[in-house]
Image (cartoon, rainbow, N blue to C red; front, side, top):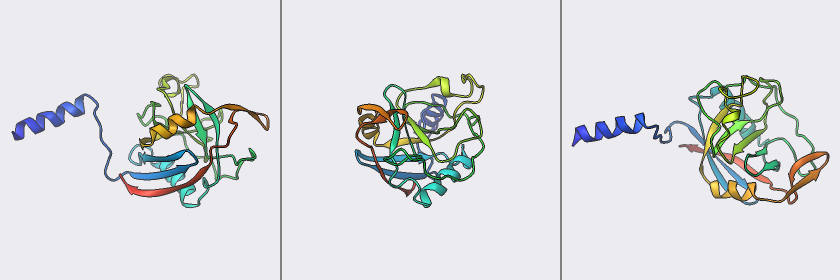
Length: 190
């Protein structure tokens, strides 16, 4: 019986079945459409997770909105308030897109400008597998750094991706009814 358990565990590793790392932090994001729990991959993206948690601990995200929503692509937040005014951020961080994590459905990644090491506070959740954002397939050869994944609340992500969007303040793909991030807090290790 013990041999069976060992073989099962080895098989699970070889087929890519993964479970949460018990030491990775988990954050709870409460939005106007519900709660999303996200495991942060501190072991794979330490710089990015430290940066994100510093914004969480400073309550930077509380009251901001998902300001860019593209169904069939991603939902983006962490930088704008309801009036589409950008909130002041800290210094940009190093891009950790070479960490082996992929921009698959339900993963959390850092948004950035065209400059690879320009990410600050803005993030996005992939609503489908977006291979073209991975380092291996990115047009710029760099890609976008994944640093977490939704472990509860994909139904909320799916509600957000389906909202009606339009233009506001010169920006496209803005939800017509603001999707407010009420709070983001550390919920504990996974």
